[in-house]
Image 1 (cartoon, rainbow, N blue to C red):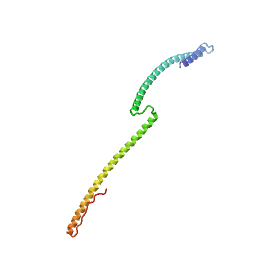
Image 2: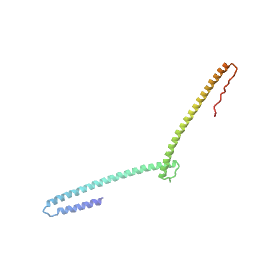
Image 3: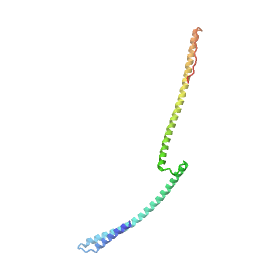
Image 4: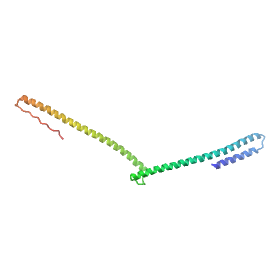
Length: 173
């Protein structure tokens, strides 16, 4: 970068000297041009110093950020290695394989969650079935009682000439 500035400055200084020493009937234009080039040279020297300082500042800032990056990356790498050791994975696990295993774990966790929902639904259905079976049993018993009372009334009406009986049959299993 400094070489570029030196080359430009050198070229402009030689043009400045040629214009200042030039012999022409319109010497005034040459002098004004040389004055402008001289001002340009001074500005380039000033900007070069400013740019050098700016570069130094930015390089220091970038180096600081690089150190911070390395520090945080090191902490993350240590955490990853700690997790690998905790789950018993050796250091030869590639990032792609780890990512694949992570996706499989997520998919399996989703499936387990769905299975748990289905199991809960099954438990509810089984409980509902038991409740309905109990209600059916109660209704069958009530129906038997109604039939038994009706048979007693019929038997009392028949006054012993014929005796009807009813038997309760348990549910089939």
